[in-house]
Length: 472
Image (cartoon, rainbow, N blue to C red; front, top):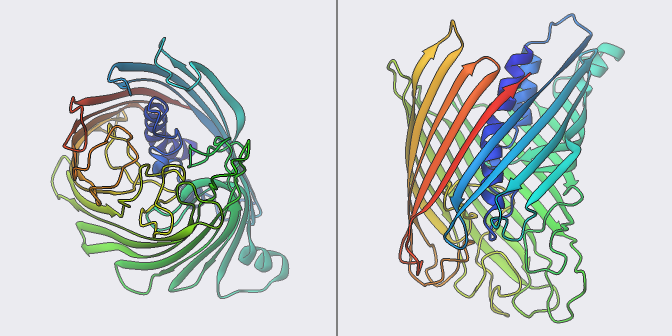
């Protein structure tokens, strides 16, 4: 069972490490942003553990880890080729007692090494950790009152507290690791999650124009409700309230920076028919955003985002999956910068640029945040080789992107897109994932972005990521 859990970690870790390496080399992108949505789904790990726990076993302790050496090469902000290697070590421990108490902890230690002259504002040789990546305590209240009090509750209630990954909906409004407390309530037809938390200490601010921007102090409160009473469909609603308590160091008397927002979202996921799966979500953002040169509460935010995806599982030998996605995030033509207060919206006007705290993959080489962008993605993957006897498996796939601005006058997060053209560009991403042995895997991702009319320099940009994953 430990290997099953480790492989959940391994698959998501490859994507997370790829995104981190790509983002660290681009000055307009924070390291946490890229592939954040794929970063260690705690729920999936927990469900796999629960499925393998013997019903009469009162104590269970599981542990393991993985080590990922990786190499990345990409077109940097000077249109040269940058090179970076990264060593990533994660050690995890899971303990369960009486089928009531659960503890999960994961330590991280990483070392990033840029080639000479390629760091562009980041540390050329950076040792991060060891520190706590994820760690929480979970109490199954329903199981506790049954085991210790002999009472049967008609609902399942769990409480969790600590550092954990929090995602609502498709992870657009919020998909991040927070220090948070949460409750899960499950009935026959409904599933509710409520949470309150804050960003971990040392997290970078989304607004890089703020003095002392590396330090973000934000609180998040939210509720998500899912309805499971419709066969093969799961509609949901969520609300997320975000408050910015970030401090300026030093203070700027001519500019405020606190961006406070809240989000309402509705969506659904399920099956059109057994081989065709769908996900769709609409989000509305409101709140207050300080304009360029503005002091005070800021102007109102009124923004919108949408994301929809179809996945068709073709019933034939190599297990093909064909995927199509359309995504939309509103922009603001008054802005000079998509993500900052300084050079932000015009004072006295609505801020219509959508800005969430999650992730949508708009292209590996482009690496843009989900703001003032629309794209269509057509993709697919197949299992080219699978030998269960020797644990060998090879998956290959590709994604094609067509990317445009929502508001042609407004910016995107890539500061190199300086013209008012709608056309951001086109991109092709390809990957090979080879599970060589049960504890060894190779991952290769390549992306090429061809800039469109939004760029003065239309030379193609490349991104290559390779990694080995050793799990234990």
